[in-house]
Length: 430
Image (cartoon, rainbow, N blue to C red; front, side, top):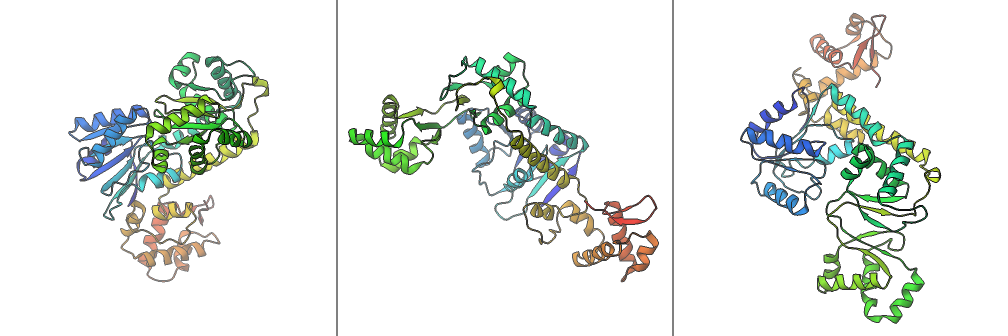
């Protein structure tokens, strides 16, 4: 069941809801700081809770996740870093304290509830301030192009890379220390790095436990000659080429454990092969790191030569804005079934009303069947192709007058039909 609750005091609502709900749940928030604060607030009310975000060590994350999966922790308060690969069947609720950036993210995160087929709810807590915050995220996610260039220059200075050098360099990069050093906002740094990555100037990973990566530094002909001259490496090189694509064009994430399993050899031998290939300058091998990384995919260039494609930038920004507007529409609509809104966003235009979300529940209070309500609504919509006043609308409608009045009032209350300046009613076009 999808619910949107308009709440000024979201924390109070959350605590009250969790106290009266059995089973385990997930609470999503936007910031790492909020995961800790909300967890502490839940614990103060004797609720078993823990927090989770990407900044924690992998061992800590796994431990927190396992305790929640085993039922030792009732509520996990997390950023969107939590959830990939989670298949806990008995999640009874997913509550979003803040609206996500897209309905794709919301649908995926909400879908972690009720996988056992039993009753579950996905609740979005929303208020007017969220509308303004979501729109502000657009400017945060897309810094001005001069600022992106400033950050590129600062990163290269910070890493002590001279113009014309740096291609292929792999550097540890603490985004917090960097932002503080140059007095940048962390969000602006993060989003600028992502845009620079999309433009092909660098790669940035904020993963605390970054997977190993390799890149073939020789061309295919030189690699073949190496294989002929070093037969002991031939089988391992073929395994790499079978297991991963794109090894000659950029750094590719690899899993040494998986390679060992496929080859039927010990994991230590895989490391030995990779290190020897690295020493022989056949591959550039970056072992698993526990700190964020920046990889220079091009040599440093002068800021005057740095090109951020205005067309691509504008297209991505417009796409992001559309996704934000879809989230706002979902949160603020009071006249269409939540499930229908979500499914229409993904291209399913003929889905039935769910009958259970907050919008459907308000319709159900009219004591009309879905069929009756929709028949009257469609009749109103057809009549108002030519705007008319309230009395004329009722006179033109067929069927039970009391039922007609109920539906018309509901449509007015939920702004599906509105008064024009000449006091005539019209069907509101979205």
